[in-house]
Image (cartoon, rainbow, N blue to C red; front, top):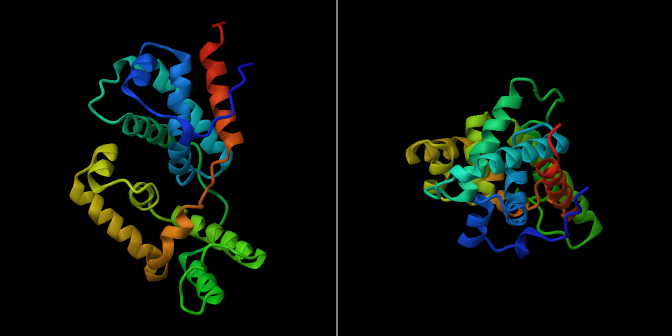
Length: 232
């Protein structure tokens, strides 16, 4: 089994040379591509599927399909945009078979919880005590559930614009929709999350669905195993 080196995505620098090597079929270069994009793809996909395991499966399939077709990547779009499109298609394919069945807390639950924890109505600040840490963890769970209740067309825009901080133009390019549609959907998504979340959501969003090094290594290793496996 391939053993991936422990390396965080922040330590990986994407250069044209690395991308060109990946396009030429260089597995080491493609590993660098995966490590550079793992966190982005995981956070994007995890907000669209029911579980961590589903997210990992989607990302692995995304990378396998990307590697097999990367020679056709012409560079007109950003590599991250191209990968997100593949991931979104994979989510849609799986969505026909998988549906979220567990009941989710409503946005009203999120608002009630946050208001209870901080009388001013905002989310609690970054944790400095065990109690605050527990409060933030609970709010993150409610927040993730609230995001999951958004219609997919709103959710995808909200994740890219609100969590990953894509520009309007980048989001439009990634999802292949007009910039005006991005603005409308983002506005409606924010409205559905209500004023409380809209005011203070940014700090908590940075902690939603954390991507640990072990998960990064696991995804990279599994994909490389599949890419290097001999055909039956």
